[in-house]
Image (cartoon, rainbow, N blue to C red; front, side):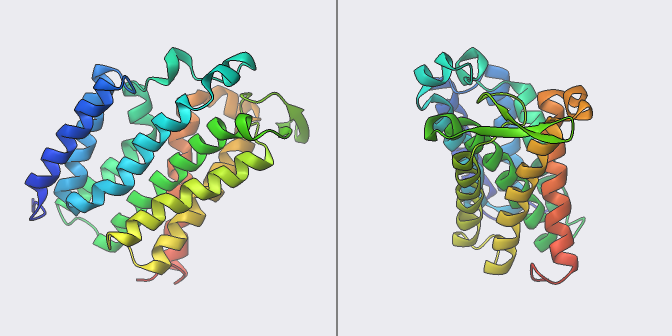
Amino acid sequence: MTLHPDAAWGAFIALLGAVLILATRQGTPLGALAGFAVALLVAGGFGAWALLPLAVFVLGSGLLTRAGRARKEAIGAAEPDRGRRGIAHVLAKLSLPSAACALALFRAAPQGALALVYVASLAGAFADTAATELGPLLGGRALGLRAGRLAALQHGAPGGMSAGGFLAGAAAAGAVALCASWVRLLGLAPAVAAAVAGFLASVLESAFAGTSWGARAGHFGRNFLLSLASTGLALSARALGLAGS
């Protein structure tokens, strides 16, 4: 196992982040503890600066969940428990990023590929959250697949997404990738590939949610499949030479 040189500094930042999550009630104690463990893996595998894309996703999701909550509650589109994230949320959305960081610790795969997986899965997770949380506030009709056909849905219905939600999802995926590029975790080409993969995966998850298989998978199952789709699309772009080497 090879720790990144600034892993200790990253561990301190991770601890501060966990305290912030608890203090602002964005997560349950178990959720904050699980998030702290994820952040330790990130710092150990990729370094303290690699925590920035994770922070954008975690803190950004908390802010978007609370934004316009009264309006979202009125239309039935608000997250339960005032949007507090528990351990199930962490496992569903951060298992694959954590696995990539753990493999980076042991140099078990090319660092570039693992960083791409880490960023793409976060981009997909944030795209999904942004589309769900901002879509109802931006207005417009929500559409989704039902019985293989597009149908008008209420905001908050599984698979429902509006034009505003699509735009919010694209912006969120881009924000995660931009931060990864800014801290030099990824170059420009792989960062773009990660953003596109994350956004497309969120669109695929929306379509899948309206199927019988999507209903069986449930909310957390679909979140995990979203991470898998983000990873698969990003690695496919890399294999085709569209995301660097």
